[in-house]
Amino acid sequence: MAPVPPPFDPELAAALEETGGRMGPGLAPEDIAAARDGAAVELLDALDLTVGGAFEVTEPTVPGPEGAPGVPLLVCRPTAPATGTGRPLLYHVHGGGMVLGNRRLGVNTTLDWAKEFQAAVVSVEYRLAPEHPHPAPVDDVRAGLLWTAEHARELGCDPGRIVLVGGSAGGGLAAALALLLRDAGGPRPLGQMLMSPMLDDRNDTPSARQMAGTGLWDRTANETAWTALLGDRRGGPDVSPYAAPARAEDLSGLPPAFLDVGSAETFRDEVVSYASRIWRAGGVAELHVWPGAFHGFDGIAPRAALSRTAQAARADWLRRLLAH
Image (tube, rainbow, N blue to C red; front, side, top):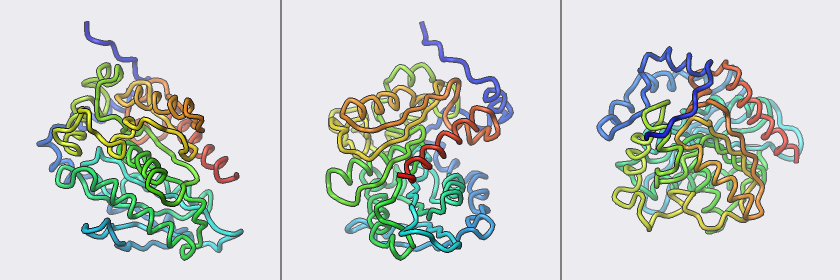
């Protein structure tokens, strides 16, 4: 008997229906090139990254990992005078299943928070799989973070108040970066905001099986993405936790984490497990499971009641983190 998925929130289900099937759950390897060239790319290019003049925007390319190309960044610095000893800085890692997207994807939400909290934003553009498999993406993300921490004072920011922010694949890379900085040495982030993070290459949780063929990102898409990143190693015994953070045996000593996920999405069980393991290791994590939400629900229906609740919870966590 096939597993029965939980129902979508009615308001979210209606919004998904309105897409008319343009945004299906599956992503096959042969779909990647077309997805990269879709209409969304033009929308990203049209974003007002200054948010009406609230930010000064630069796009430097900074030194990459040894022997690799430079890493493009998007740096958004508040134009208002700084108060206190140094602004916070939100280090944004974009989503896209490790195979899509650029430094503009999802940064509008991070900029909204930055405007509220008088923070700077640095968004990193990492090399994409399958052309650049692991460890290229996380190595680029780490290189961008090291440059950001080194130059934080020049941006009017406190290097001790850097928060990692990422959704989906970006959430997985942010979690991997937190592990890498802990283990290999480097600046300690103030916190890590992981929104529906992509954490586990094994793709075999009950929610992965339960949600196959539904929502916006299902088990087929997940297999395509992880295989692009890891090749034949996907699901095997030798996958690094810096590729798939769910593989980490030790989750102690990590920065405070915010994790959220929908009850009706592929990543539900791996996110809940990751938060539980942080608690078992003596760490700090706040977990939200949004009832009836599919992956990317707040992007499809930003004005839905559940989306507004999720947005408020994320902002509230940041507010409390930065206040301390």
